[in-house]
Length: 245
Image (cartoon, rainbow, N blue to C red; front, top):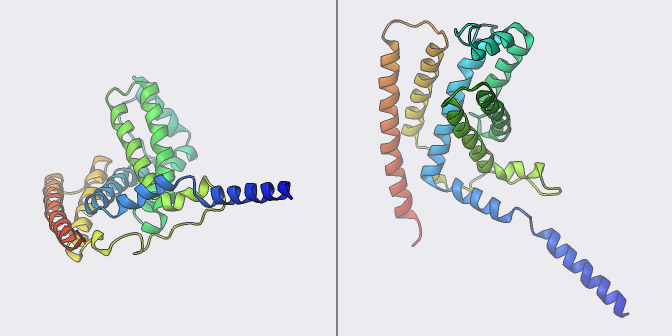
């Protein structure tokens, strides 16, 4: 009888432990971050930056074009020339970068895009370290941190990859206040800024546009950045005024 009670107690303790997710704290801070107006907009800007930088670059590779004009006189140039000579592998790299750039822009596929970009950036980081790209390695490291932030941001979905029998948390209004989302005016500003950034990075990768377009794109993009901050301050103030004290 006594042994039976001990067995029941052991089973109850096991059930209690199993009902508590091992990532409770991580999940809490992830969902808390998603309710912050500034972190929401900063994360959206990070997604834009990754997409703007890698879609034009990936398109160059997908078309089988050279990535740089360094030539084969330097180890870096020789490395890119060798990758270019592989043909289908070079195009595969470009296709993956384009896919990641598209996935990271869509809310439904952001979790997949964040994982894909983390792998891409880790690969680029070790390439820059191994070939001696100098300060480019620091930039690659910062972008790796940005990708890890996106994984943290989407932890409500990604947690199912690491823990068994944990349901996917739906990123709906029950976890995120509606005031955190973009207003209609912000969506227009962000859209114009994204378009300008995409064209600008495209021009750095060989896109031919009329002379002076770079200055125009930079000017419009910088104006959109200022407007985004202004709208962000307004939304944040409105959010604080309506939050319970």
